Length: 154
Image 1 (cartoon, rainbow, N blue to C red):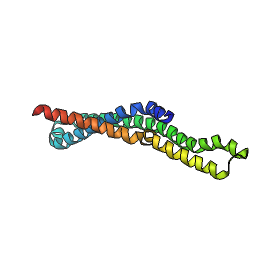
Image 2 (cartoon, rainbow, N blue to C red; image 1 turned 90 degrees about the vertical axis):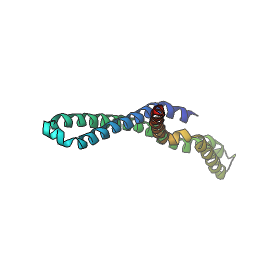
Image 3 (cartoon, rainbow, N blue to C red; image 1 turned 180 degrees about the vertical axis):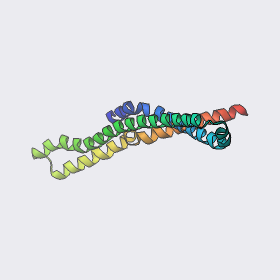
Image 4 (tube, one colour; image 1 turned 135 degrees about the vertical axis):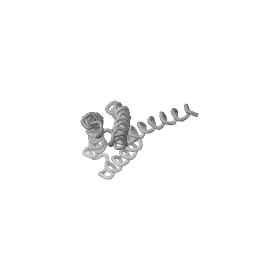
């Protein structure tokens, strides 16, 4: 449907951005663990500034990517919210001329709006669940990479 195609077009970068976010957060966690494990030697050799710079750079990359994700999600939410409200109004706009012409009763307008919304809601799975699907897809990608690497060692 129009809504699904538009949602995919607006959110196509979200899967890659979510995958990048998982990677950047993993890099940050690695830096923090490495820093904690080597704190004594870092302090002994006076490497605090360099380590702080490295951890700060990784944190900045993770935050910058999260901002990109939030921008994409914002645009996607603008569309999905507008789409949700439009599908509430559209069937009434289509059937209301028949009501004003006296051809049908008010109950028919309500029934047609309900039927339209029910069918369209079932067809709008991608519109309603795109953000969750993109996060799930990014996680699956990381997990598949992990499994491939583990199997290569066997």
